[in-house]
Image (cartoon, rainbow, N blue to C red):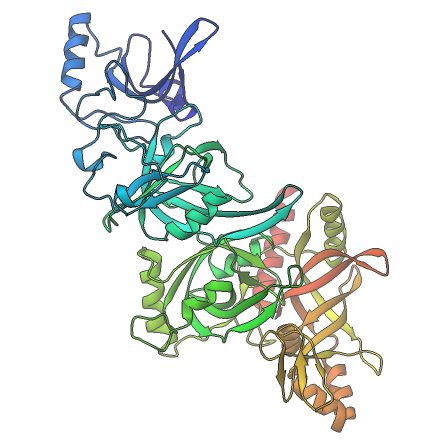
Length: 603
């Protein structure tokens, strides 16, 4: 009989020291029988080596080894659990096509840990029912074969059928409604994880409604008979090769919440000083200490006109940097009761964020989304380290935390994300590489360069700041009643907060170019706030002219982001400073010496 092995089993055959060789005695534990034009073969996803070819001395010894194997724990491959009990059949003469028989408390039928019964709705969605059979009406409760095992998530593949997985929900998206050429629809998804890994599960239509009502993050569920397809890495950040869609044959069941259940979750934490290396628009995982909690602001979506809630939370980590995190919709309620009880999240709490988007609005920022999940009590070592650092260093005032893009002054004494970067380019090289990157299809390009400010655009027809909303920083306009109104959040204030929007010409020995600078870095470059500059323009214009003149010709280290936009129907490349600091001449000189040594050694 021929056997086709799943990809996760290839190291057993092709590795440096393969366990499966000619003459070895093996046992397919998880397999499916196939018939292709009269040729029968099995697809194997879990395989156990009973005796290697070296150890198998005779047929009699091999039979003895197989008997001994059925009475003792076996080695498992492919991420599936192989139990010590012998393999049994589901029904008379029907082989078990998933994993071998589990312990009694892990079977799907009448297990003590079951909170609700398996129920399938004929319309195609899945639901959990806790009502007695007499109260279920037209709902049909299918019979579950006794003795079937829970399949490990990493062992799932599209060639299997009649499988059931058990895991804990680690993420859940909000229900989203959409409209396309086929009409209106809804979608809701969640991520379920066990000790082997995690997988994304999605429901559409009625299934989405049911998932939204039934599934809760942190609870334990069993899922059966979903449709598997290759995972889309653009929207799926689990460690499974596949993702699951619920169909009319799928079933979902809530189990007792096992607090000791071990789950494996893919987590790639990025420190704040490394966020500059993450391309804008990409997703990442971060963990930090809550330093500030903003108020909830009401907005209206420009695309859908639906009302939105927004809250900005400032996080810090031991990079001594602070980064703003924007929460949307229902996630704003995470900190709604921060002053209500001792257990509520507050300043000084640890927040783990999975799948946040690295933004570039006014510098480096983080944006939560529908697929973002938050953990206010992460049980990982990194959380304990950050908690201790915050208590010992920040609360005692030993260190000063600065914005991820802001710095302590022109002397270079402040920390920042540029400190970890050793790459330097001339301005001419920045312009050339940015154009090439954008021509190749990239959405933006980022480079670090040393430049001097040679001119700041100013004058009667040039506004160096704009009146912004204190809540969402959007532009405001003055009403006829003397108040200032923000159209985005529909709030009115007595006075706006002025924020910089500067246009500078920067230059080095190779080129010059105009760049845009926003409020945080404008304060650093000018040396005062936009409110102070507005007062100076009105009351002391001569002093303002001297201040702008003094700003020119200083040497700065800048991280510039190049992005293509359209102005008056013409495409152009716009450069924005996303990180700025004064040059530390000692560290920059060391970098120059290293560059000289590298050039000399290459000769």
